[in-house]
Length: 361
Image 1 (cartoon, rainbow, N blue to C red):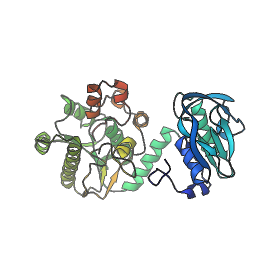
Image 2: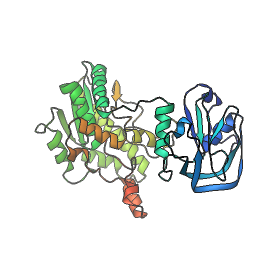
Image 3: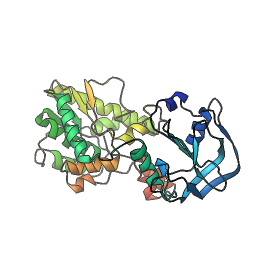
Image 4: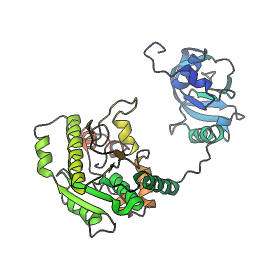
């Protein structure tokens, strides 16, 4: 478990003074890297367990002295690193929680993030607010206001082209951009022929010249173009790559017609980034506007104002921008993951968790 191939971080991270919370294996790894000792547990724990916590710890502020937590481990911390103290125990686990306030390091053998840990959210809130010092006063209206200001400063007198699909993500991005730069923005809706019946007309009715938003709107009927590119292709990842490149090529062509377009705007949200394997995460599936992008893109810069938001946060941003609820809560078109989950008998809820499928683009 602690060999050369084991996932690990550098020991030096614990000397930076920044708050670190090790959860389950993370607590064991923290102990191991700081010269503590991790051994196979005499009794493995899996499931709910009563943990006795030291309420003088910042991590357990307002937590019951005896609280139910979710355990899942076969190893345990046999000897803590120097400078650490025990802040939680169970009948089978002598170090269910530990901390070194001097190093700002905290570890728990259980899982505070799951619902089975009854006061887990209190513990996580304590870590964020009491230990990390976060105020917890971030609000969506501030995010929207600051984003609009940042977009306006970035674009300046330039022009931007927004990849608009009519889905939640791209719609929110489009309205945010419009409020920032107005007529400097052109929204291009690519009707690729892969949507629901009449959906193209519905998108145009909302965002086109007769809609409620002051947008430069272009509809590109590219159904045959996409059908030709996808003909005979059955592998899903390859399809996504093809769709991603073809989208970009259409946008580039439209940008040349407009003239001097510096920025491409996309409704990328955070699950897209994670699933597409950017950074060190594994590729789940390449989204056509993240991992599906071709290497060469004929734009000065790509603007993704929603890149750090999850789907529920994107919807809240949409409401802050004044987008009607029926658009903000519009059901995305069921994608491949949704269909496969239903073929396998998975629940609708599991198929609809963030990141299973998303709007184009």
